[in-house]
Image 1 (cartoon, helix red, strand yellow):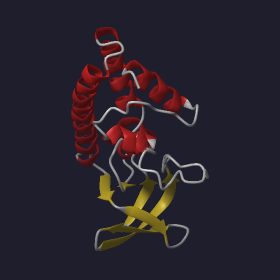
Image 2 (cartoon, rainbow, N blue to C red):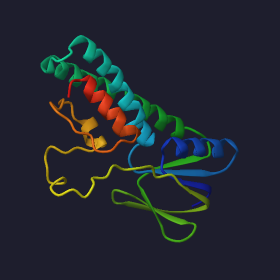
Image 3 (cartoon, rainbow, N blue to C red):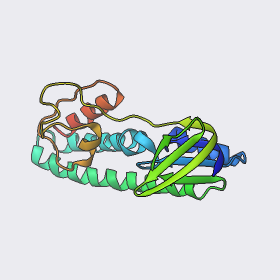
Image 4 (cartoon, one colour):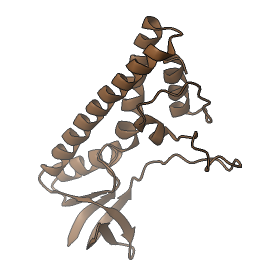
Length: 191
């Protein structure tokens, strides 16, 4: 199948570009292997800011009371998960139901300059895109520190957001925007 626009990655830039291209009458295909919304919705901005808000309440209510802060943390993670799930589904439906957009859940790879293969489970689809945009986002990495990858106490920004157990102590490696949000959030929860 041939498309005017092919976009690899369904983060904010990817799905917005797909919507705008489709609104201008261009046949558009969007590939996403995880979830529409990218890092911002799934592992970054939305979940961290939700938990920062919750941590401010926990800090005021149960300052220096790990047991009660842990209970609030578990509830906060559940609320965060509910919000992220709602927004993810809303974005998915918005994109999927737009005219001129075809959405594929799967991993894209190039076969040639304008030919892309999408693999989803055991299914494989070959498509062509006149113009191709790569919007693959970011993934947390573990620095090359001896023993880091083998430790059961080491988390990435993705894995820590999936845990509903509040760490008693936490050391954040990395002072970028997400690292600073994690430090603020977990300090508020008393870690």
